[in-house]
Length: 267
Image (cartoon, rainbow, N blue to C red; front, side, top):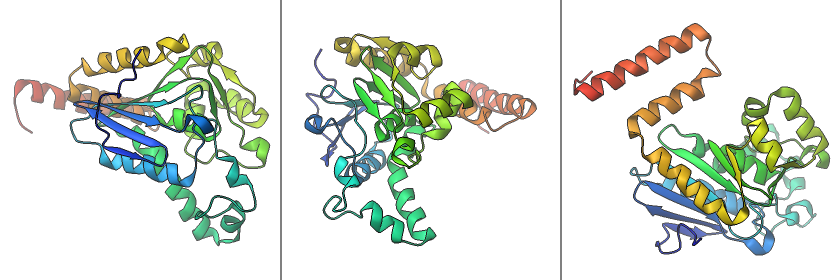
């Protein structure tokens, strides 16, 4: 199947990230298959810029990676003493004070946070390796469609680090504390069948059908009225932090807004 963005003029195309927009559907593609879409601070800045560049017409964002792997994690140069030219090394970061380290990591995290905005639904189409930062980028999205060759793994703990690119909260929410802990501290692979059974992924398909499955899911989301989708996403995202009683109050308030909107009655 042809890639969903091949005939569109990119809104952004830099540092291994391409953003294309087709009316209500945007596609973000990781474009460095030669390095298995390895991640770097430059790529994270480009991903954050892609989020800022989304037109208001966009309702669904599909995230995909070119080549055999979605993203094999951090660029290995980041683990060398020299690091990546023009970027701070891990040693440089370690030498900063607490505020400096916090600020640097917060900037990296911006690439991973905008996918959760209530005004969009984000879908990750994941094939092959999704390791470490790649796993966390897939977790940043609302939904995941995976190829039957997918291999998720959280390797940060094995390297003496922790997952710090916003992946811990969604992972626990999807699979529960015990399995999330086991996945992180062992660094083992999670394959397609387990991903679907555990709730990490909505569906698994043959690799050749991955783009089509993501496109079909995007079309199904787009078939529902935008404001109803936005309200529903906000309700579900907020449910984790609310008591049952608070959640039913939030449901009533959201429904009142929907009824008034459908009836053409202003607040």
